[in-house]
Length: 188
Image (tube, rainbow, N blue to C red; front, side, top):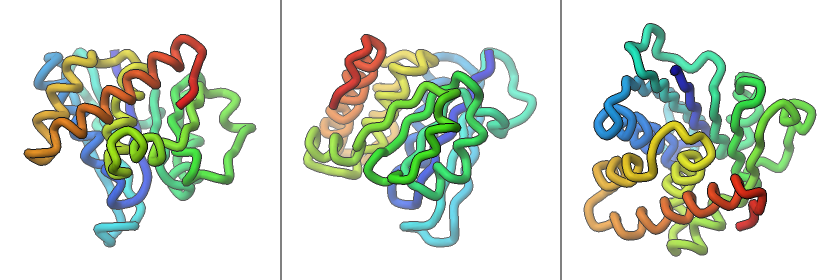
Protein backbone atom coordinates (compact mmCIF):
# COMPACT_ATOMS: atom_id res chain seq x y z
CA UNK A 1 0.00 0.00 0.00
CA UNK A 2 1.44 3.34 -1.08
CA UNK A 3 -0.63 6.49 -0.69
CA UNK A 4 0.45 9.88 -1.92
CA UNK A 5 -1.07 13.08 -0.53
CA UNK A 6 -0.48 16.61 -1.82
CA UNK A 7 -1.27 19.79 0.12
CA UNK A 8 -0.93 23.04 -1.80
CA UNK A 9 -1.71 26.71 -1.40
CA UNK A 10 0.23 29.74 -0.29
CA UNK A 11 2.34 30.54 2.75
CA UNK A 12 0.40 31.21 5.92
CA UNK A 13 -2.38 28.70 5.24
CA UNK A 14 -0.77 25.89 7.22
CA UNK A 15 -0.01 23.65 4.23
CA UNK A 16 3.21 22.36 5.72
CA UNK A 17 1.78 21.89 9.22
CA UNK A 18 -1.08 19.83 7.75
CA UNK A 19 1.38 17.55 5.98
CA UNK A 20 3.54 17.17 9.09
CA UNK A 21 0.46 16.14 11.09
CA UNK A 22 -0.50 13.50 8.53
CA UNK A 23 3.05 12.14 8.35
CA UNK A 24 3.36 12.03 12.13
CA UNK A 25 0.04 10.23 12.52
CA UNK A 26 1.20 7.60 10.03
CA UNK A 27 4.62 6.94 11.55
CA UNK A 28 4.25 7.56 15.27
CA UNK A 29 0.69 6.39 15.85
CA UNK A 30 0.05 3.84 13.10
CA UNK A 31 3.49 2.30 12.69
CA UNK A 32 3.60 2.98 8.94
CA UNK A 33 6.39 4.44 6.86
CA UNK A 34 5.99 8.06 5.80
CA UNK A 35 8.05 10.71 4.08
CA UNK A 36 7.10 14.38 4.08
CA UNK A 37 8.62 16.86 1.62
CA UNK A 38 7.89 20.53 1.13
CA UNK A 39 8.57 23.41 -1.23
CA UNK A 40 7.63 27.04 -0.84
CA UNK A 41 8.41 30.43 -2.31
CA UNK A 42 10.87 32.87 -0.73
CA UNK A 43 8.07 34.79 0.98
CA UNK A 44 7.09 33.41 4.37
CA UNK A 45 3.50 34.60 3.89
CA UNK A 46 1.71 34.65 0.56
CA UNK A 47 4.25 32.75 -1.54
CA UNK A 48 3.40 29.47 -3.25
CA UNK A 49 3.60 26.46 -0.97
CA UNK A 50 3.23 22.72 -1.37
CA UNK A 51 3.90 19.70 0.76
CA UNK A 52 3.70 16.03 -0.03
CA UNK A 53 3.29 13.02 2.21
CA UNK A 54 3.95 9.50 1.00
CA UNK A 55 2.62 6.79 3.30
CA UNK A 56 3.34 3.09 2.92
CA UNK A 57 3.34 -0.17 4.83
CA UNK A 58 6.84 -0.90 3.50
CA UNK A 59 10.00 1.18 3.11
CA UNK A 60 9.53 4.08 0.69
CA UNK A 61 11.86 4.03 -2.29
CA UNK A 62 10.95 7.46 -3.71
CA UNK A 63 9.89 10.33 -1.42
CA UNK A 64 7.91 12.47 -3.89
CA UNK A 65 4.25 12.24 -4.88
CA UNK A 66 4.17 11.33 -8.57
CA UNK A 67 0.43 10.79 -8.90
CA UNK A 68 -1.32 11.85 -5.68
CA UNK A 69 -4.22 9.74 -4.45
CA UNK A 70 -5.45 12.78 -2.54
CA UNK A 71 -4.80 16.48 -3.12
CA UNK A 72 -5.78 19.59 -1.22
CA UNK A 73 -5.93 22.92 -3.05
CA UNK A 74 -6.04 26.16 -1.04
CA UNK A 75 -5.20 28.60 -3.87
CA UNK A 76 -5.89 29.17 -7.55
CA UNK A 77 -2.18 29.00 -8.40
CA UNK A 78 -1.80 25.63 -6.68
CA UNK A 79 -4.96 24.28 -8.34
CA UNK A 80 -3.79 25.42 -11.79
CA UNK A 81 -0.36 23.90 -11.30
CA UNK A 82 -1.10 20.57 -9.60
CA UNK A 83 -4.64 19.43 -10.45
CA UNK A 84 -3.39 17.56 -13.53
CA UNK A 85 -1.17 15.38 -11.31
CA UNK A 86 -4.00 13.84 -9.26
CA UNK A 87 -4.56 10.17 -10.01
CA UNK A 88 -7.74 9.27 -11.89
CA UNK A 89 -10.39 8.47 -9.30
CA UNK A 90 -8.38 10.36 -6.68
CA UNK A 91 -9.72 12.82 -4.14
CA UNK A 92 -9.46 16.58 -4.67
CA UNK A 93 -10.40 18.88 -1.80
CA UNK A 94 -10.85 22.46 -3.00
CA UNK A 95 -11.16 25.71 -1.03
CA UNK A 96 -14.00 26.98 -3.23
CA UNK A 97 -13.82 30.64 -2.19
CA UNK A 98 -10.15 30.89 -3.19
CA UNK A 99 -10.42 28.92 -6.44
CA UNK A 100 -13.01 30.67 -8.62
CA UNK A 101 -11.69 29.36 -11.94
CA UNK A 102 -12.16 25.61 -11.99
CA UNK A 103 -11.32 23.06 -14.67
CA UNK A 104 -14.47 20.95 -14.59
CA UNK A 105 -13.25 18.92 -17.57
CA UNK A 106 -10.24 17.77 -15.52
CA UNK A 107 -12.28 17.36 -12.34
CA UNK A 108 -14.61 14.80 -13.96
CA UNK A 109 -12.04 12.06 -13.46
CA UNK A 110 -11.76 12.83 -9.72
CA UNK A 111 -13.83 12.72 -6.57
CA UNK A 112 -14.09 16.45 -5.89
CA UNK A 113 -15.13 18.08 -2.63
CA UNK A 114 -15.29 21.87 -3.00
CA UNK A 115 -16.28 23.89 0.05
CA UNK A 116 -15.63 27.34 1.52
CA UNK A 117 -13.21 25.77 4.00
CA UNK A 118 -11.91 29.04 5.44
CA UNK A 119 -15.43 30.29 6.09
CA UNK A 120 -16.45 26.99 7.70
CA UNK A 121 -13.37 27.08 9.94
CA UNK A 122 -14.13 30.65 10.96
CA UNK A 123 -17.75 29.80 11.78
CA UNK A 124 -16.64 26.70 13.71
CA UNK A 125 -13.78 28.12 15.76
CA UNK A 126 -13.82 31.87 15.24
CA UNK A 127 -10.44 31.61 13.52
CA UNK A 128 -9.95 31.24 9.77
CA UNK A 129 -6.43 29.93 10.34
CA UNK A 130 -7.83 26.64 11.65
CA UNK A 131 -8.88 25.85 8.06
CA UNK A 132 -5.86 23.57 7.57
CA UNK A 133 -6.76 21.45 10.60
CA UNK A 134 -10.41 21.25 9.53
CA UNK A 135 -9.21 20.08 6.12
CA UNK A 136 -7.01 17.39 7.70
CA UNK A 137 -10.14 16.06 9.39
CA UNK A 138 -12.06 16.09 6.12
CA UNK A 139 -9.20 14.35 4.32
CA UNK A 140 -8.94 11.73 7.07
CA UNK A 141 -12.58 10.70 6.67
CA UNK A 142 -12.59 10.79 2.87
CA UNK A 143 -9.31 8.95 2.29
CA UNK A 144 -9.62 6.31 5.01
CA UNK A 145 -5.82 6.02 5.14
CA UNK A 146 -5.36 6.94 8.81
CA UNK A 147 -7.58 6.67 11.87
CA UNK A 148 -9.27 9.62 13.53
CA UNK A 149 -7.52 8.71 16.79
CA UNK A 150 -4.05 8.85 15.20
CA UNK A 151 -4.79 12.19 13.56
CA UNK A 152 -6.13 13.65 16.81
CA UNK A 153 -2.97 12.64 18.66
CA UNK A 154 -0.76 14.08 15.90
CA UNK A 155 -2.71 17.37 15.97
CA UNK A 156 -2.19 17.62 19.73
CA UNK A 157 1.54 17.03 19.22
CA UNK A 158 1.87 19.66 16.50
CA UNK A 159 -0.29 22.66 17.38
CA UNK A 160 0.94 25.43 19.68
CA UNK A 161 0.26 24.92 23.37
CA UNK A 162 -2.93 26.61 24.42
CA UNK A 163 -4.62 26.06 21.04
CA UNK A 164 -5.39 22.37 21.44
CA UNK A 165 -9.12 22.80 22.16
CA UNK A 166 -9.81 25.09 19.22
CA UNK A 167 -7.80 22.92 16.83
CA UNK A 168 -9.60 19.75 17.96
CA UNK A 169 -12.90 21.54 17.37
CA UNK A 170 -11.80 22.32 13.79
CA UNK A 171 -10.55 18.78 13.26
CA UNK A 172 -13.81 17.25 14.47
CA UNK A 173 -15.80 19.57 12.18
CA UNK A 174 -13.69 18.17 9.34
CA UNK A 175 -14.51 14.62 10.43
CA UNK A 176 -18.19 15.58 10.47
CA UNK A 177 -18.03 17.07 6.96
CA UNK A 178 -16.25 13.96 5.71
CA UNK A 179 -18.87 11.70 7.25
CA UNK A 180 -21.62 13.70 5.54
CA UNK A 181 -19.79 13.51 2.23
CA UNK A 182 -19.47 9.74 2.49
CA UNK A 183 -23.21 9.52 3.12
CA UNK A 184 -23.94 11.74 0.12
CA UNK A 185 -25.17 14.74 2.10
CA UNK A 186 -22.19 17.03 1.65
CA UNK A 187 -23.29 20.40 2.98
CA UNK A 188 -21.46 22.74 5.37
